[in-house]
Each structure stands twice: as C-alpha cells, then as structure tokens.
Image 1 (tube, rainbow, N blue to C red):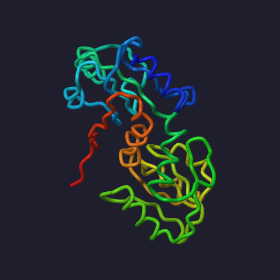
Image 2: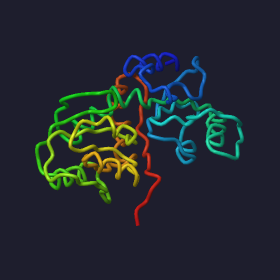
Image 3: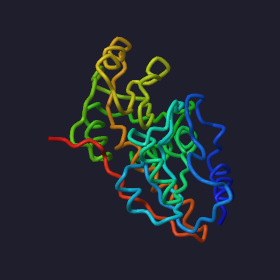
Length: 240
C-alpha cells in the first residue's frame, strides 16, 4: 500500500487538522509514493528501535521526532542523528500527537483503563464523575497505570468530578472545572498553583498515560492487510 493511502486513512481516523498550532503531527520522514508492507507503532523513536526495523518500514509514533523548527542538520545531534539512520534504511515516519489525544487517547484511558464514563469533553480534557474518597481513587489510579510511585496534591478528602489529560497537561490547570486533575509531568509550581485553586492533582506520568497509543491504533489498523506490529517502547526513566 502506498504511504499516501495510509496517511489518508490515518487522517480520516484522527484528522491532522485537529492538532494544536504548536504541534507537528503528520508526515515527518518519507516519500508519499513509497510502497509500505509493514507498519510499526511506537510512542517514540530511539536508536535501538531504528536498528530493529526492516528496510522500508513505516513507523507511526505518538510524539513527533521533529518538533520545533530545525535550524541545522547536524548528524551528531538529536534528532538529526536518528533521522539520518531512518533515511539510510528507507524508514518512513508519521506522527499522530495532539490530534490523536483529542479523538482517541484521552477517551480510551478514561473508559477502558480507569473504567469510568465520560460525562464531558473539552478539547484535550475528558471529565468523569467518580464520587469516592481521594485515597481510594488514588489507589485505583496507581494500579491502573502501574505506577512505581504516585505524586499527588490532596486538597479534599472526597472527589466528585475528575478531569484527565494524558501526557503533559499542566498548562490547562486554570481551565479545569473539577475537584481533581489527572495528568503527567507535574512540577513544583504546578502543584502550588493547583493548591491555590483547591484543585487536587494526581501525576499519572507522561509515558505511563500515553502507553496505550499503540494498542488503540493497532485495533484500527489490523485489518489493512499489512503487517502491523506494536513495538516494545520503553520508558526513558528508571526508578531506584
């Protein structure tokens, strides 16, 4: 199947026009007329993954390998060092980032991973009503995301409405209309801001909350007649 045909199918599934203005989803590397017979799904790209791929593979990732504007292509520096290896192996790459968050990832995490009904959607943010104690809910979240440690800001003992944004969503704190907000990459000043707003926080991890990207997309692509493989993406962090 031609790469541009696969791109069109992905665009129909999760329109690239829905991505945020600061994002860079879409075709990162490749020739739209390239023939593809194998697809690999991954959150990110690293050297080990590239080395494991067959020549001519299409790699569909959540995070764009080219995010900001490139001012130089220095093959000794990231990300040009990885792009060079991809070009040498004729590996194409399409990124589905904030568009996929909005159309699929946040919904899947709320309904399939946490097991709650979505009661409201607002762009990146999915809302659920949990109506249970903070401590019990934290225990459920820790287990659902297989967290090694759970960082929280506790502002109330009971939770009614809870908001969720996978990845890194603390820039949205001012807009959240809930008792608690689940997201990743929570920093010190995010915690201070949330506390002043009486908004509890639970850090669900960036990698941990987006881990399900490949699983979701695989379910949509498995009937294309192509080989579709989920890569064993690894969290760059270890906990000691």
